[in-house]
Image (cartoon, rainbow, N blue to C red; front, top):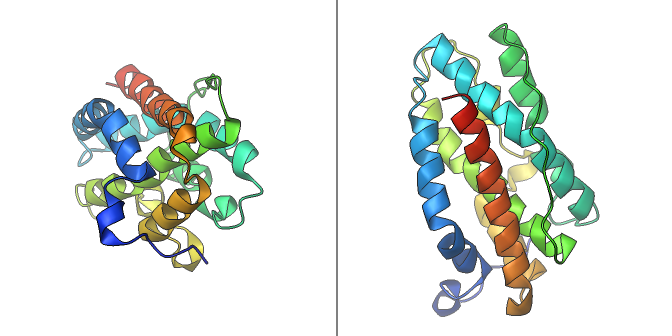
Length: 191
């Protein structure tokens, strides 16, 4: 069970706020590129999923390797690659080759926590994008939520508890920027 969130007055000074500030422009660009796909069409939906299939495998593998021992995270339940591949198969679209992920220097755990922040946060955007899909379109990837109700609030609480020392935050910020940059490269490829 993740720890409780810190008191309200401390919330805007924690790690998640640092990550949010460090990735704001990248986040806005990813939202714009992702939303540019015509998800209401088969081709637009397939292009969006192919882009994510370029970015997600390497990121999930790297985060999983670094954070496998973090019981609070339950990484295996959070992995979305199987759902993504299933949606591509329903559309009759082959998965593209994944992009390589070059892990930045620094504390591997902190870098992975920053990348996990981006991967987990993308579920919120995916839920909104799912509304643009036509009836009956494959949506396992966009609808995926971790088992056991360990959603965004639980993830944030665990993240704050896992890396409370601001000395580790620059490495987490590098991991978050890496995750966004990987998705941006993939989305540009499929634009």
